[in-house]
Image (cartoon, rainbow, N blue to C red; front, side, top):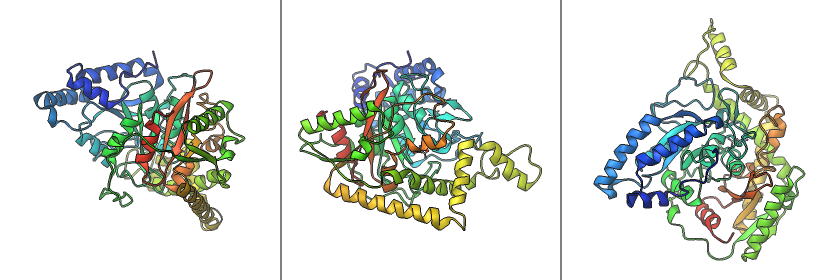
Length: 478
Ligand code: GLN
């Protein structure tokens, strides 16, 4: 079976069973390894740390047995990581051939913090190359499949992470979200996906795509686990100057949302030309459910919806063209064996190492930053970003949350959008606003289409308003 009901949906359940002696971390790890091998055809894992994980699990079980109080808050959590997160002495490739064979010397701060709390890493999962894409149809490592329908994509770019949780091959997976890459695959695979506020989690050790947008995110079976992981990973880090010094609330202790929320949505989004009827109905039904539960849900004006995608793709490709210039065949990973001269070394290493989509974006980004076009594209897109920010913050002064679909449609078929990049870009229309403005957003499952494809919606909140967001999403009102 590719999809099974998850053995556990929260770490709390696991801890209860560990404490009662009903299971051990070794047994759990064996279960997840078994799931990984049963779901091999989904092509989720690029690397499985089987032996290492079992050995570590045995150590942690011993530690727990000797003194239950000595283990960290994440003892029992078996997690996978997107192939853009550095884990010391392990491979990381960004889903690219250009980093083939590269091993990281250090761990991302987020991973370091999970390890310090005794989380267990089980493997590294597939993604779109350098996070650039929405389908996890990786040109080098193959397509990852959606466990709900193996002819369909799991979404992207954290598609491996979403499928890993969906197929119950781990409890939680860490991904990254530059324009929707945690939330959209979460929605396609029927799991929860949290993109925190920009700067909430340190980006140190996250391979950069577009640095003013990137944020590490969490894919989980439950908002409770998302809350705990956020609590552990968030907070200032001396290695990332953009990490926030704001105190980290005890997200995992957040009480259920009480009182009535004021929620905004955009009619222009719900009735957007691109929206699939099933997604539209799910959104309308959720609005009605919220209203029935006593929340105030109001359609507000947002004039910029159709400007979001053009501005996002100008800004992110500009940043990507700069960030990816470091992969030159000299410093990291792969160097072309064909190269005879220095010039050839750069050219061939990059030509052979990067896939088509990454090259397209590097070229687009280089173009929008070039002397003659800088003002017409880059400066203009920055101005659009500012307008989008101003209007979004204005809405969030009056409303607690903004409700949006995650993607215009459920998971599409493999191959359906990989010949038309613009069609794929346009499908990011609902997720990019949170990254343009830096606000937190969380995707949650709301149902399925008639064919059994998961549908997800998202709520966006105020900057650093993760606690409210998490408590509202975990609330039983809906
Ligand atoms: N699909 C978007 C893009 O290709 C978002 C990617 C992401 O969030 N990493 O840029």
